[in-house]
Length: 170
Image 1 (cartoon, rainbow, N blue to C red):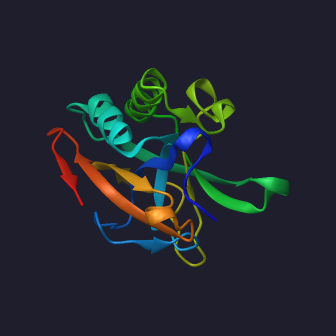
Image 2 (tube, rainbow, N blue to C red):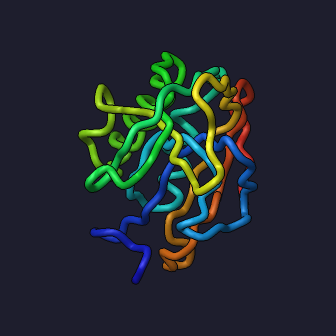
């Protein structure tokens, strides 16, 4: 299976990791570090980096609270911990969504963006967050969903730190 989407675009996701995921260190598609997905989209690689970087600029780290569990996905087979509504987190999502759309990217599941955005952290086996946990989301990462065309792997390719707007690239 190739990593190219329709029209030569490439699959990416912008996330705020809760567990470490250094730029340049790949992980398996079933072994994600805990994270909050901000936006999944298809775009040319350099355009994706530019769009996310431009959207973030200088940002304050969202301070979020973990809410109750829910079941997402087909027939509710994916257990998640919802993140309580947060203005700063919603703003990051909206800024990235608009920048990607304005640059010609294709947003996955548009019904789950904007007002439909439901931030959550997927339970990963024994790894999970607990209701009431307070988290500071100090970085946003751009993850390649099919590095070198291999959709079995994920690769953080850039990271932006809150308040600095500085990018770390792999």
